[in-house]
Image 1: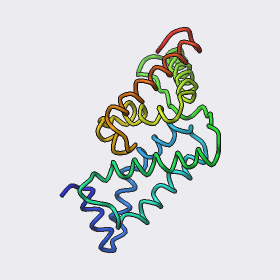
Image 2: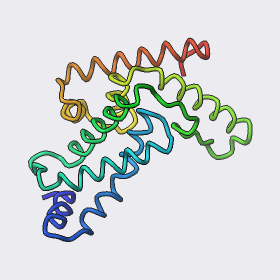
Image 3: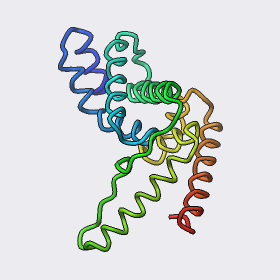
Image 4: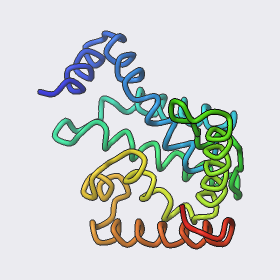
Amino acid sequence: MNEDTLYIEQFLEGKEAGFEILVRKYQDRVLNIVYSLIGKDRESEDIAQEVFLKVYQGLKFFKKHSQFSTWLYRITVNTTYGFLRKRGRFVRDEGAIEGGAAAGEGPRGTLLIKERAAMLRAALEKVPVKFRAAMVLKDIEGLSYSEIAKILRCSIGTVESKIYRARQFLKAELVKEGGEAI
């Protein structure tokens, strides 16, 4: 029995602490996925909160033979997609991808990193969300192709195709914006 399953069991036995531990463990990952799909704004945190509310309400239906993280990420992506459908547009925000300078780079290095992060942010937001989700789950969250396939409910080949297409869109946007791919 893995750690997440123990926390789920605690919660199902009436101990709220099990759920609180799961929230603390996964809240940053959920927010990162939401931020990557819609940008960082006030609504991103509302979406993440909605995700955990759905998890709270649905945890009794979770099938323990699958990974909790895969189930959680599926809920995150589906909730974000639902938000995007209701909204009918995408958000741009300068805080979606954080850029930090490596030690010793100084102000010039910091500025360069921030400029590149802003360019990457703008280009990422132009990638169609149906492709962006797969790329975010792979390149930012580090999930395997099979995990992404479960989350997006498609074949591994479709995941590979979506990631390839997302990277092609991203590369084209970066070239268009800055004259070169990062």
